[in-house]
Amino acid sequence: MEPRDTAPDSWEQEDDEAVMERQLRPGSNTLNVNAKPFVPNVNAAEFVPVSLKTDSGELESVVADKLSSLKVSRSSGPVENGEADVTTEETWDEKEVETSEEEPGGGDDGPEEVPTVDDEPPETLEEEEEISVPKIPPIQPDAPKKEHINVVFIGHVDAGKSTIGGQIMYLTGMVDKRTLEKYEREAKEKNRETWYLSWALDTNQEERDKGKTVEVGRAYFETDKKHFTILDAPGHKSFVPNMIGGASQADLAVLVISARKGEFETGFEKGGQTREHAMLAKTAGVKHLIVLVNKMDDPTVNWSLERYEECKEKLVPFLKKVGFNPKKDIHFMPCSGLTGANLKEPTDLCPWYTGLPFIPHLDSLPNFNRSSDGPVRLPIVDKYKDMGTVILGKLESGSISKAQQLVMMPNRHVVEVLSLLSDDVETEDAGPGENLKLRLKGIEEEEILPGFILCNGESLCHSGRTFDAQIVIIEHKSIICPGYNAVLHIHTCIEEVQITALICLVDKKSGEKSKMRPRFVKQDQVCIARLRTAGTICLETFKEFPQMGRFTLRDEGKTIAIGKVLKLVAERD
Image (cartoon, rainbow, N blue to C red):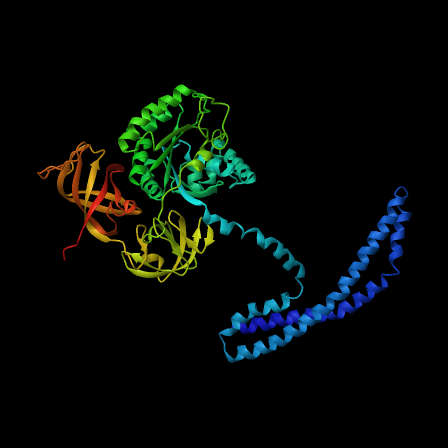
């Protein structure tokens, strides 16, 4: 009953106002007309300021113009209003008839009414809209054409990953100067003035207060040839699982190390995150690694070549052991995240470095070979509700377009793509390597878990619980026997896993397999084992689909082993 009672009341009040206006307007019109002989009032200006006699003539003409324009606009006003009142009154009567017939419509009719009143006056608004609309669309057709590259920033806590990310965004014009000045002021108030650049990527309050990244920050920037997505991974050892999720989406890793005395050593020694992150990046499928030696502007370093070489000498053997080829896959470069030296422009401070600065180097990298005609595989990183179910992930292969029918594995839900966002820009279709936000129809947000995979109906990805894999034990104090439990990280999926059987040992140099079944494996050994997960997961063999066939095993906050899936074992009923 309420909407029915209130709507007509407020309408009557409006009606009274309209009547009042109609009574007043003719009077005001006549007043305006009478104002014509009232123009000599301006001549009074001659009388008061004696010194400004020359200006008074100009004033007279300006005021006369203003008054005449006012008369025109006012005289035209009431007619429009009168028309609007007449039409709205008629429609309201019709509406009243409708509402009395069907009650539920009563509440919804109010908003429908408004346009009739508003449609007439805003001619100027329409003109403004016409001017402002074309600013946005030109970006859209251009965005997907450039090659998409996902860059993950990894390294020890406090090496300067977020600061470098913020500086890059500023240098490429993704963050304006005013925003950074605001961050700088806020950071100064908290006595953290060197942290302001990282705030461009560390957006939540907890991260800003502690100066530690927790979740993988996302941002993007463009160069002339390529479109980059920055994934700012957390460096703290407690948040390594988040970092693995970030690295699994990356094509390129940037290992940030601090050249400051003492900081490089703590990051690189046992228990430091420099080693673990480099290894995890390799297992996540990152082929190319750029090592940024940051904080070169620090007083303890002062762009010294000796310190740079020292860091390099310590890192290369380790990166080689992890599986990177020092000649092809790794590129070292000095920089300063806080001052931005050697990120976009070469710096005079280190004449000994002759290579390209960071952003031009990224631009000059060869293109990645990605097949867009393969099967659709999109591992889900995150999901939330926003006018439907929205999922985030990187499209590993195939292409997705609007209104396409896909299947969510392992639950086999058939879903439809309602809209596609690539780096917050809406597109009609997307190719492999792009970071996407998809709005889906036909599935609830609660039914999705990170690690699920979107596939096309023709070629579904494999799912199961038991598989055989080749494992390299990297760091484990005691021996590992069948029955050992750990946490499995495979693409974006995290699941508990048990080693059910050890099948054979593999010789590291020759690749020969042992005839006997080993009773246990220990650090630095390679073995083939059978693993069984607690729940059903999506996975592929490494041979068929490398991105979904690599994994890491973690336990007690440490990475114990890395491996690749060799064979999927069918479940015995």
